[in-house]
Length: 436
Image 1 (spheres, rainbow, N blue to C red):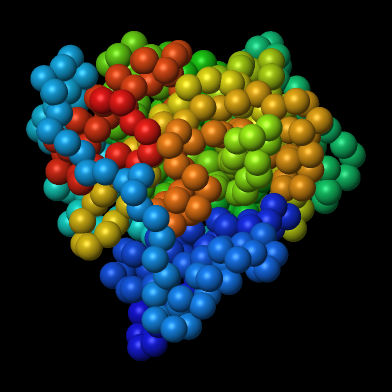
Image 2 (tube, rainbow, N blue to C red):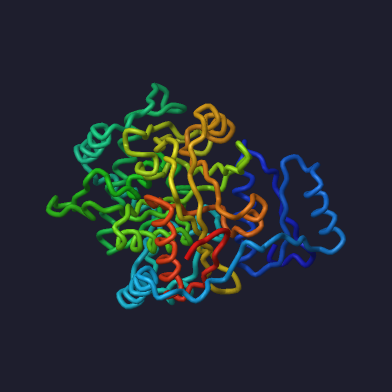
């Protein structure tokens, strides 16, 4: 694509059964990062007039024009407590710095997820590149009793696991044991390097050695989680705190999760955060409801607590060594969503608001069954942007999500986050209906 000299059109079917939309948005983000012009379009069955008109426009002109009226540049911010907080947190980060640890950068092939040091360092964030072989070696040093204690904690807090007998296709207790060793090992390595966030890539490396990383990732992103101690047993690591994990080592998520954690914590809010794949969506009862899913690494608080979380075996095709998800349905509530991405050689952030809604149980189950029933789902309604406006604008296969207790608090948290991004030198865009 980088050396292609003709017009480029990316397209995907708007369908649930395979993550084609995830691939489309990831490709678009990569093209945006490399500064390569492209057009994009999507359709359920490629027979609707909107798609046909777009295709006709591209054939005739080499471009497709999409509605961007829902996107606004960040205005001058009022001198509010939220603005003051965001700017103070930005100043603190620029002065004191932060380190993100990346296990095997780029091994999943997500070009759009790799952020150059020259861009990151300007924001006060630095990278420690780590090897997944070191993570595996550290897992081998974790005592069985330590993993057992973490497992007992999860069971005592209400999590359940759907076990079977055939390890090739079903979840086993041994698979979960390895996942808990990964959780402990990741925190110990983070302690070694003084990390502020960590990202485990898993594919294409650890998948050939150990069960899926998702259970470990979701636990890390949870404020309420099993305690982990230093190797000598003297110190509890990051006690009472979520430790930001950026799934699939997506460094756009790393920046986002780090800033969300600091803003939400400073505001006295629960800072648990996760990314979701933008998987699919359909209208329900007069509004478009997105299916946001991720492969099992959601923090339990997003589901309503550990007693709402179930461990299902990851699919054997992509996860040959198995491992449990943190499966469930995200609780209804007000959320702030965002994406940090690279465009025109600079870091940008899109901020937008949404609501996770409660659908009838049978509708939610239908949506899970036609996508990945073993993965956690969030039924999301975006504020002030249509399906096609979102698809045309969003520069990532992922969307970052954090809860607030009510709409007014969500608006304030978004304002503080916008001020912090702006103070870090990241160009901020407000997408859809946003109240500053």
